[in-house]
Length: 350
Ligand code: SIN
Image (cartoon, rainbow, N blue to C red; front, top):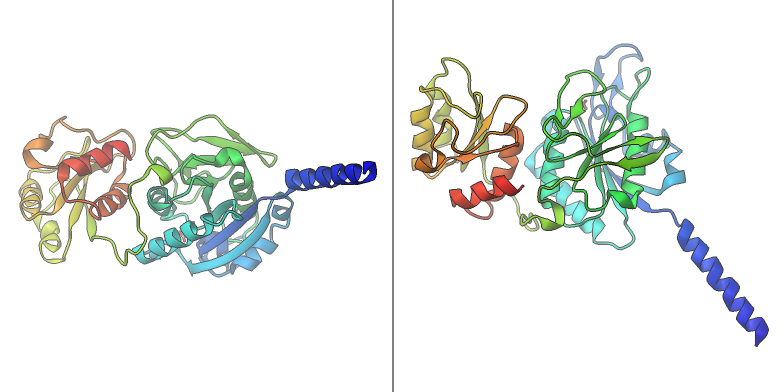
């Protein structure tokens, strides 16, 4: 009896230590981009985005397997300048499917940097899990001297594997910093330190494989988001009109014939419009097209009731969302309602 008891105790201790040291299971979903790019030489910047498959990317960073059990999956292999809403729907559904599995602990998405902020924000609103989802990429092709992709991928696995990354919304991990999907913008066309969150700042950083958080995002996301893309085949059509001095109203013509349900105005200053464009924005609203005022200015909010009487025209102000992110929230909002006041509320909360 005594022998059996001690055997049971040893068994329990072994089980406990195995659980304590069990590595998390992380999926890497690859979509292409410069991180998977191959160049003409190690020193020339000419390269082709999305050339290398996920297995090669994983094999280039063996240290990741000390942090987590890694499974790779190739979703698409494209330059992110060619990103589509179809890929977004595929990604969101696949991530939701994977994260519903209790054996999956987190997701890393490798992605081109050109539209990474858009995909991250779309997922931030449509992933239905509080487990970590981390997007990463590279500014230098995988064949370049001092390619940034391997360290970005390694750091992203460390981030996705860390329980502290739960409930933080979808994250972008690039060049040693961790940023929130809501506020992150690509700020430099060539520099490895390109992603910043100019209105809110980063959430944390990594040093020697360890994740340090010093902030949270207060915007609604993931499990607190009302948007659900399960079963959706397409998103309502929304475009962006970029404003400038002496703009001609004819830029709005496609909106009246092209099946658009919404338009985001990348406006001047605090979302102002040129007098030439105003009648067309009003006409859009009268035709049932939702009009969101955002700004071409990179920082600061586009606020309600500043120089524009939004209530009088039924316009919606985008607050901190830049035009490309405002377009995403408007597309998802239009899957729920066409009530401009409800949509304004979404822009305040998300
Ligand atoms: C892309 O977005 O796919 C090309 C640029 C990059 O990844 O840095």
